[in-house]
Amino acid sequence: MSEGKKSNFKTIAENRKARHDYFILETYEAGIELVGTEVKAIRQGGVNLKDSWCTVEDGELWVKGMHISPYDHGNIFNRDPMRVRRLLLHKREINKLYGTVKQTGLTLIPISLYFKDSRVKMQLGLCKGKQLHDKRDDMAAKAAQRDIERAFKEHNH
Image (cartoon, rainbow, N blue to C red; front, side, top):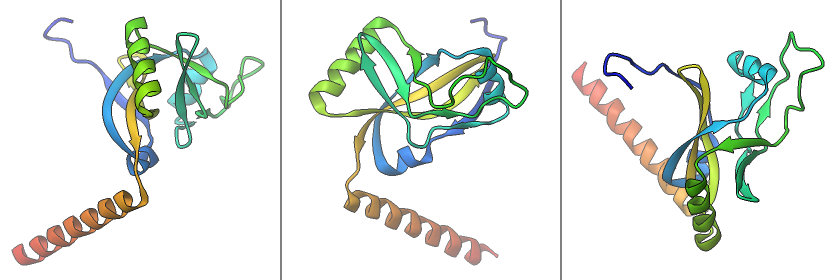
């Protein structure tokens, strides 16, 4: 890529539940195989990653549970909103992920969906599930940080 060119980056959807329920150990960027009306629906913001997950089957990476609303002005070409979609990664990356997920019991979770230039990309996280006490610790830390910021702001005014 030339030095003068900036990549156009626009976030479409975030999976906030993933950050709450999992420790994200590594992230990967994958392309996603879509049809035309799905891209148009994504541009309108009709996508939900909340309960989605990824699996490796027959050497290919698939995202399941991702909901893309049917395109408003679509026609017979609209697809099933919950259909399984293929993710595009290099073969060696897929094999590495497959081995890691099988051995260590980690999970592949979609973290965000975004446009990079004109292409739709998905950020995947190699995640480890949080226990209830981990979630409580996170909530307590966030509350403490808010209290500190609030006290600091009041002190400065």
